[in-house]
Amino acid sequence: MRRPAPESLSDIRHPGPVAEDRRPHASCLAEPVILELANGQPLLSALGNWAEREGFGSAVLDLGGLSLQPFNFVMPDRAIDDRHAAWYSDTHSSGGVALEEAVAILGWRDGNWFAHIHAYWYENGQARLGHLLPETLTIARSAQLKGFGLKGARFVAEPDPETEFTLFRVKQDQLSPSDLDHNAIITTLAPFEDMHESIAALADCLGDTTYDVFGLGSFAGAQFIDGQTMPGLISEILVRPGAGRGQNQNLNLPVRCVDLTGQIYEGTVKPAGAPTLVTCELLLLAQFTSQSVET
Image 1: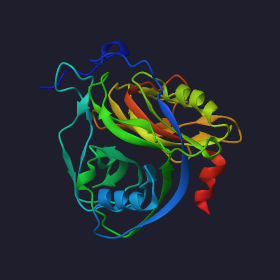
Image 2 (image 1 turned 90 degrees about the vertical axis):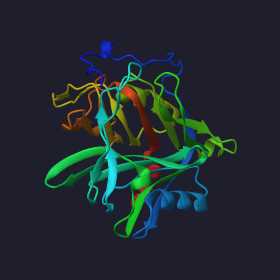
Image 3 (image 1 turned 60 degrees about the vertical axis):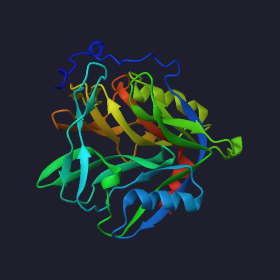
């Protein structure tokens, strides 16, 4: 039996000790990449094999437009015990679709390649946003993906004492590029850290006032600059293309969110209006570098 949904931030209690570092991060070199995927390949092994060949420790990839064979996914939901603040829904199945927008964080779990994927798509006339189960994903049509391969730091799944989830954590590689080569930061925000404020603070380490933001995570409610709100405090989110700080010096963070009822929200998050529920996994990339992937 699931616990009642929280009605306020004070109702959200994570079971473990509060981590001292609320914005853990690591500098890295992010290289623009374009990779080819063949029809019929299991997605996780295809991405892992590619990263292995290219010498990347992790990657952040845009899966928008990728066609998948039937797969499984889960949604955000209430906790199933008296410890966790939230949990996943029962497993849902898709008949196979082309993803409209999607982000894959490629990293490691138990010594093997693993991917955390949030995606938005239409199926049977209905918009869906969910957490895709990577071991169930098979490519339905040959495709070309863009994104960034990471060197010098990586995402590694480990038990998180505060939330008692196994989550991606950021790890600096021993053989890191020199400081001059660092053009990006990866981070995993702790619960209740505001995404907008955290990104603005972490970006000071980039050495560039313009940067792009990629990633996914979960919010405990959200307020958008157009006045809309997502009142539900259990959600999963997807950072949309175009997020970051451009020449106008404004940090814009367009997102899509889904709450535990399946309601989907989209908008640009308001400063101090997007507290993290469990974590947000993000790549902050100096903009002059990210633009080169378009050429």
